[in-house]
Length: 410
Ligand code: GLV
Ligand code: MN
Ligand code: MN
Image (cartoon, rainbow, N blue to C red; front, side, top):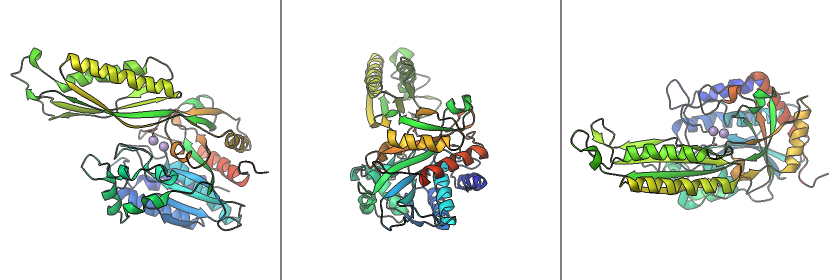
């Protein structure tokens, strides 16, 4: 009923749209993302959907209901990747959802609701630093000012859209009306080790941890590496090194908290020049909002204090944050049943990674199905899943779709 080999082959095929030679990097609004979107549009059409690119660069496919125009069940995930990524994070959810629709259309099954599959253009937020751009637009959470955000080479989101021949003024039209979506359900690799450790191919997600993204800018004085005595230096990178350790210390203060400095740039960046300025990112996640917010306050205070001791200026700027997102109990129940129907014991677990559902919850209730990944590894080219697990995930998703009862339905 679902073709697991085709799911795997399509994940491979999308991995070929990459700006990184010999690896996979596909960021929002790149030429490689455009090519990937084109390929996905073709798969959607072949699966019996009406397919289109929306004004923010998401790919949409709609499989009409038995009564045309009826509200829809929304499925999907994202098509962008981190740098030097694996090939399943996000992609598997889009490809599996298309496979499920393919199965429905091949059997001529029409449901009392439409099924829409969305391949979101940006979930990772790698290029512009702000994340969930595709799903925020669908949920109506994208302020027009965000389109002026620029990437590292100074290109704005609006300019990136124009390069795709999209009109930034049309972005508000991407918003779905409340009531038009019955639920959003996403299949995704677990990105953690729990399912593998317990010998389970599938899990039902209970909630998605909240996140805070920050950018710190430290300003000292650039100078000659040979002539300026150590006691007279205002070395921004030496200060940043202490800041990175402060992030780690704060993150380690609670087992539920994680904190990462994932990107750091020192300027001017030469072997014989004292670094005059440094910019680095901070990412905190936690299953409790107060814990995460407290960590942000604590680390900001520590960075300011230690930089002031070194006579280095520090600015910590919040980039984006989102609170814990709970999956709807009624959807978890139906996903439990879909997992059990595969002969798999039901395991519920939270998600440490962020997902498009964090934005979509502003539109409708959300649910998620996790598929085991090898070693819990993700955001890494070694990311891997088995074809058997991909098949189990798609079959569970198909079962869920075919037995889906909207909230309050009979
Ligand atoms: C996306 O994968 C995120 O959790 O940052
Ligand atoms: Mn990811
Ligand atoms: Mn993802």
